[in-house]
Image 1 (cartoon, one colour):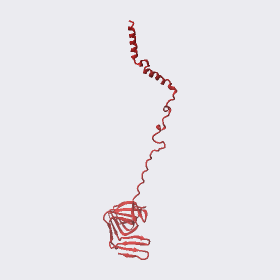
Image 2 (tube, rainbow, N blue to C red):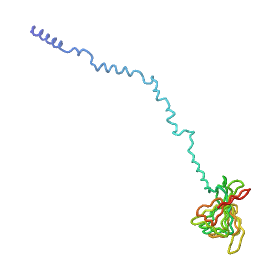
Image 3 (cartoon, rainbow, N blue to C red):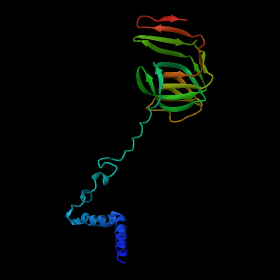
Image 4 (tube, one colour):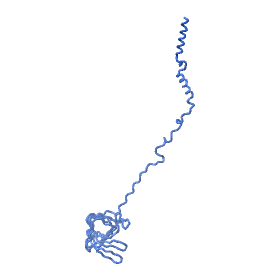
Length: 235
């Protein structure tokens, strides 16, 4: 019995010696739990609030997209009206006749015409045919010099066919209505009061600026250059 107890004691000591030494150290979890309270010991009230929480929002976030000084777009002004067309007259010339017949006549009104570099008001007529008895046309080609075109005495000159445009500064003569002669003097300031399709004038003088359309036929035409010194006749 005395020998058995020492052997048992030796076995217990040996068993204790074979146990791992970690059983005597504190477990790792105890270190973690002891360290965690140290991070929360400082009260949150001792730290200042974040700067972003007390900083107001930038001014650009509340600014309108359109600048305050911007004005609404104004409506563009309408374009100016186009100028009225101007008839190309060039030079004034005078027609005299013992009788003037105008067929298919239409008084188109008062228009602008360019005469000697100036814009003036003239009467505009359109016709389908013209008959001119004892025609004489006179035009000044230079100061003191005139070009005269005359038909054979007693003959009738014609302007036809098609649409004829006549631009007139003045038409003066006798308006023949069924044999009744009525003196007339038509200008842009005193245009014809009536628009008739056919009219006859006698002992007429017409100051024109242009004649467009048709073909002028002058029987036995004579052309003369008349100056202050002496006329020069051309055939």
